[in-house]
Amino acid sequence: MFILFFPVGIYMLIKKMTTEKFNYAKNGKALRRLGWVLFSIGCIYIFIGASDNFQGVDGSS
Image 1: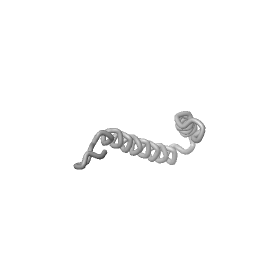
Image 2 (image 1 turned 135 degrees about the vertical axis):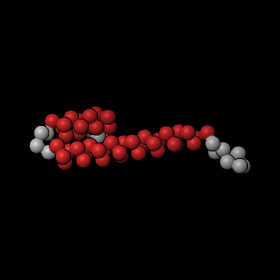
Image 3 (image 1 turned 180 degrees about the vertical axis):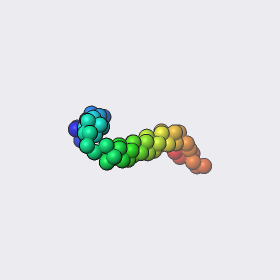
Image 4 (image 1 turned 30 degrees about the vertical axis):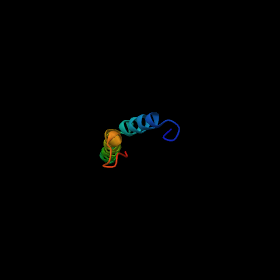
């Protein structure tokens, strides 16, 4: 599902990790890492979107 439809893959991964009752500590660390990765990707996209309109000294973008 990660390859075909990315948001559904994330939802299914989180659902699987929260339903496993015997690995709470391990799953919590994995969910924290996933959160940081998604946060980092979001920050990169915001930076790219904001810097799209900047122009250099010679007028090129």
